[in-house]
Amino acid sequence: MSIISAFVKELAIFSDKLKMSENIVIIHHYNPDGDAIGSSLGLYNAIKQTGKSVKVISPTFFPDNLKWMPGAKEMKVIGKKTQDDQTLLDGADMIICVDMNAKKRAGVIQPQFEKSTAYKALFDHHPFVEKFTDIAIADTKYSSTCELIFEVIENTFLNQYFNMDVVTCLYTGILTDTGSFEYSSSNPNLFRVVGKIMEFGIEKNKIYNRLFNAWSEDRIRFMGFVTCSRMVVMQEYKTAYIYITAEDRKRFREKFGDTENFVNIPMQINGIVFTAIFIERDNFIKASFRSKGTFDVNSFSAKHFNGGGHVNASGGEAYIPLNEACKKFEELVKGEYAEELKNYIY
Image (cartoon, rainbow, N blue to C red; front, side, top):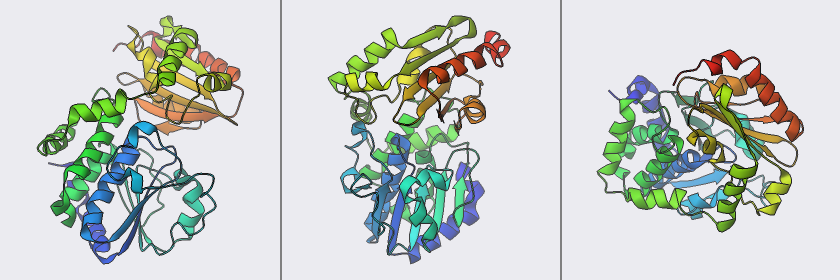
């Protein structure tokens, strides 16, 4: 039985509202990842076949390794020249939010989103979803929002519009948000969905290479540098972290998305179950956390670094100097979480 079966009423309402709408806008969270872009474009490629007007708005730029995806060139991407555009949602009679559990994650679009009288729907898989839309289908049992969007399309009138573009986008988001199926993604429904996608004959090897084997030389050298010079291993506590300074970013000519997955580098060390990365940005420290097994980085991030996400993958931020953020992290690992990590068995 699919997970979506618990949302039969909501699906019917969404389907009816979509049929009655003519101008649809899809938005995702700022600093979008593969799941945000994939779910947006998967839904976009299905809806555009109905003849309705549909567009995707991204609150910020997104990584170069996602720009090949079908429909990416048609996205409205907010940058410095467009962030004050007050007409972004004009004429929309339906706004669909994907992969965002709070309206603040719409970034610069939030004020216009709040003012819009369009019917609002949400599809998400994060915990602690705020009520900010007219209808919401959200469940943490989904590996990704892309898995959820597949079932939404499958169980509405949109099911006649599955094509290669749609499933390519959805598979991409599933692949990235599950860490190539490495993260805790044991629900059989995920593999049912992937099996259905595979029936379309997608080029999964090409997708993988476009995602993970198409970086710049600067990015590869940057990765080598942080591994050698910016990684701290706390073997006794089965923990490791990476820190990156503003000067490091400048030295390696960092582009948006270059540090994606750097947090996973220490996970390759035998015995490490908890990793983090702290990146010095213009006015704050960006943090990301990863774990193996049941060690909950979602609650860790929410409690100590103003963030959240999933049990094994979460983000956060700190408004203190980089060295203080790293010191705080070490003190937490050696203090509040010391016994749990020392005795953790994976």
